[in-house]
Amino acid sequence: MQAFQENVFRKYSNFIYENFGIYLNEEKKELLQSKLLKLMMKHKTASYEAYFNLLTQSGNREILVEFANEITINKTDFFREINHFEFIKKNSDLILERNKRIRRNSEIRVWSAGCSTGEEAYTLAMVLQEHFLPGLLIKILATDLNSKVVSQAMKGVYPSSIKGDMDILYLSKYFEKVQNEWYVTESTKRLVTFRLFNLMDDFPFKKLFDFIFCRNVMIYFDSKTQQRLIDKFYEVLAPGGLLFIGHSESLTNKKHKYQYIQPTIYMK
Ligand SMILES: C[S@@+](CC[C@H](N)C(=O)[O-])C[C@H]1O[C@@H](n2cnc3c(N)ncnc32)[C@H](O)[C@@H]1O
Image (tube, rainbow, N blue to C red; front, side):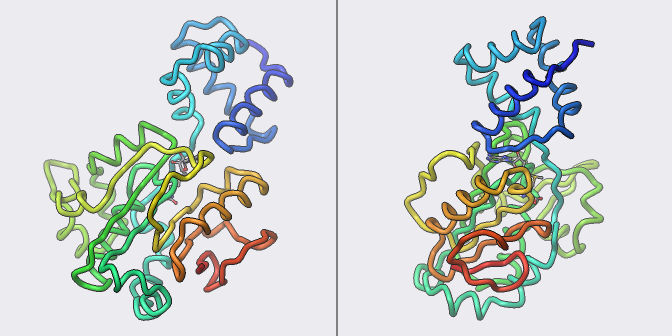
């Protein structure tokens, strides 16, 4: 196996950081190496340098997307970190009181930023239909950098193992079982729009969001990138809107204008 020199690792890690915000420390060196070897074999490039040139100089967007698909970590589950969904269920009065936009427009706009294969977005769709103000128009945008997970999310088809992740009520009401797979019902799929989007890019949104879920995404970024992102989220949240972050994440040590509600939940 070709040696993965320190300077070559640094070249790749800088590229990943600059393009995707993902910070790789020394400990990730071997993991990156094995992913690169796979890509190099596929493209029949003889060295790390040759593949780097292909990646950075060919102007081929597909190669860049394929690279992003390889280096991202996409672990997710339905009802992951359930206390966020419990919070929404139990606090609709507070949410509607502080964010007047929702009742006024009879609409709730949610962003699942770093949605992976869609479980977070569909969980939100189920919880909002089941437990939030009835009759509300629910609009969920779900985005990710990885094109593979976005395509999978759009299909809304999950293995039988999801049975263990949720109450039977949700499973029977919001899924259809076909052979051994569970299909999200069309009426729930319609509430979610999936898009490929890099969080490092400028946000193109014209309308504000009432909830932003960005969970277990910022753990891959360094403090500077996290700071930039939480500032950008603030700009696109409605007054009284909520930011939910992952349980191992926090805004402590960041400069921000959010109101702390409880660990991992912040309000504009
Ligand atoms: C571990 S998953 C978290 C999924 C879900 N939010 C959850 O908590 O279960 C992290 C996701 O963030 C995405 N991601 C990483 N960097 C990104 C970036 N710069 N822009 C958009 N998505 C990114 C990855 O592709 C991955 O699907």
